[in-house]
Length: 340
Image 1 (tube, rainbow, N blue to C red):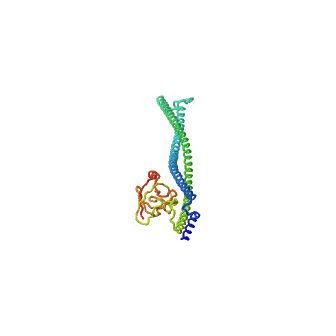
Image 2: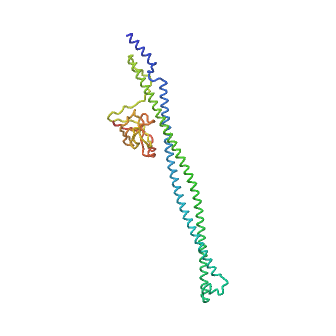
Image 3: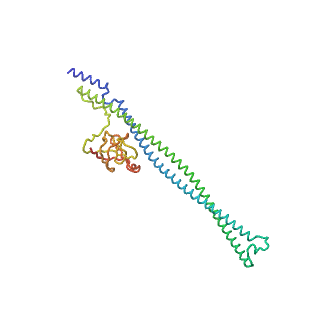
């Protein structure tokens, strides 16, 4: 009896020294700090993801605007080329009409001939000469009217060409601005995507650190329990457990679970190697084992085939085929069914 009591006292003295009195305060504080960092990283990642969605939407609109401006510029260039061709044709017609008018006037007012009627008009009588002069006057008037009409047309076409040139300059300026906006948004979207990759890496590192500390705490707990049993005492119940609470794993049959379901829309592949798609669900494997079949109200059937740094505890991520559907779903508390 004395030996047993001495052994018990020795074990009781060893427990604090071995770090087996559940989790030491410093280690527990470090675990809590890492988990707080996990939560902050998850929140930052969500914000960066929403920012990336917004940038992609603005980028799509800017690209559409740029394409529309380029199409309008091409149409305007074609219209101006057609207008300039018409101006050249009108100017050529004016030159022709002016040449014809000059010939007619020379025929009307040519002087110094011995027999103007016979030489100029080829007439053998006064009546024929008068008729010939009337024809020449009508021709001259017609040429003058034609020249005036062509001049007005040339003036209208010139004003149209000037207006088209001004519109072309405005469109060129708008295209430069739209191109600059597209380049800036592409750079911003690339930066956000790189930030998401960095946040994912930091979250993975933090998660591995938490898992390592949890494993150390579990080993310390087991040593403490072993020493306590050897001393014939029960483990103390005052220490705060440091391992996260988990649901029992599904080995067969069916069970239900209340979870927060968060929707997202991103391309890529899952942790299991499958491409993301409808029915692919990210889970915490300590709560829902990978490969478990699920039924989610309002979403349908799925399979636990992915993990995520922000998916801890009773949280699942649901892939949506579009950003609009992901935003419409948001975050919901649902009761899901798990099939073993």
